[in-house]
Length: 244
Image (cartoon, rainbow, N blue to C red; front, side, top):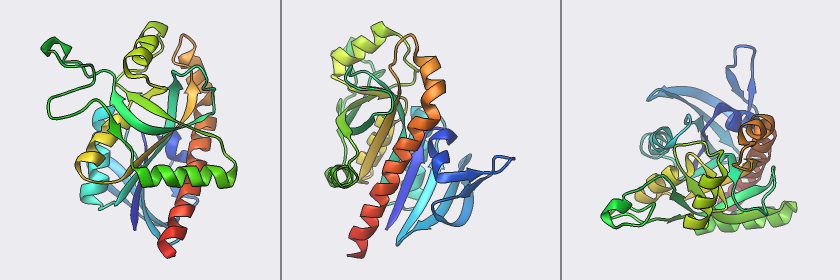
């Protein structure tokens, strides 16, 4: 089985990697095969147990995330896509470091309400894209076996870093979202269209308020480690299931 693992920023996949002084990543947890540069991006082909892995970061935003997800599926032949990264909290119950599993995702900045449609909707599309049930089930099993608390909820995506309480409250009210970020829903749309199971995991790095920038810079690396560690545990479970 071939699985794509992606983040948006190098910091989000760096916990899977070791970096030299020149910042040339060397695969840490995986048995490296090769690095392939394609479409303006670098993809690392590796193995983990009996799984083939394609590891990459897309760069920030919905367009780059869509391009990268499409490349993982169409060019590299990935059968599942796992996203590891960080997000801002909307749900007041979420704290920095908490893990949020996307049960469904939406685009909070998609707006053709002038034509009578709800926020986040385009004709022949839908407001929410639901994550793969099997991968959600695996995440619950991993969380239980490792005694790691996870939170399932709605993740909202948009091409803007939200650090404004008014905008945050609007997204919460409009979409009943628990967290927000800049890539997840676009990955979901691509995977859904190409019939590829996907899983989006985010560790909370900030509260999407006036302190968001400072919190994000401080907690980015630690939150990325928490997210990537959980993804690695999921790979272990998937590898066991494939072997059996």
